[in-house]
Length: 336
Image (cartoon, rainbow, N blue to C red; front, side, top):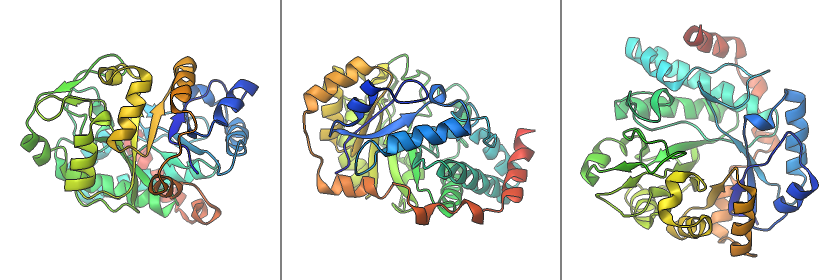
């Protein structure tokens, strides 16, 4: 069975201690960062190392959104910030959608070459010039975000990768960065539903195989950060929105998640809230304590089935079918 914890690793290759940690039954995935990347050749070897640790193979993920959040650069296409695609949409909607589609194709096809299963993208937050998300967001209009997000997800699907949208229910309106502080959004539920939740309506769980929750506390709605809130995960995402794909929490070792308790308490709360897989990154000591708390916890069969659908297979690696020249030209027009 696939474990329920996704963690980060140090360096460009796995040492013996890391390999032993990854063998723990609660570990189900690894998220890679820029520190794990030196070259395409090295990345190939690292992913093979990770994938051969145990069976079923660990999921391998990365934040390869484009713009300032693109972990792999050498040997990879420079993908523009999503806000640039939103601006292109303002000038010509068809061109903006085509650019989003091309971005999805390129991101997914390049990652699939190396056996990477997941890019946590697209960002479906609403653009706010003062917000922490900033130019990672497509647009301030939720209907435009919805349209461009679907275009990008369709491009990813054509290259054999399902999208994992973020940051539910919406991170765009807060200034506080959850890496550094405790973001709070005081808007009413009706305001959030009318704006931030629009991009999440009627999501196809094949096209959008996963959704990542955020650490924003919506103080007028629920007392805990959304990632640890049964209300947001069960009542809104699973209930009102009817989403049936995999649910990930954002990194629970961020400061923004500390409102939900100790690292171990955050993990338990996020799982109890309904997450299928939770992230815990950049602190091996905290991860080891979490693993002691979890013990040999086995996830529900439904959770493992949802996560298993995200794994790369030979039949989903279709990079050769992409019209590379056309896709890259569209992106270069936005980055040059």
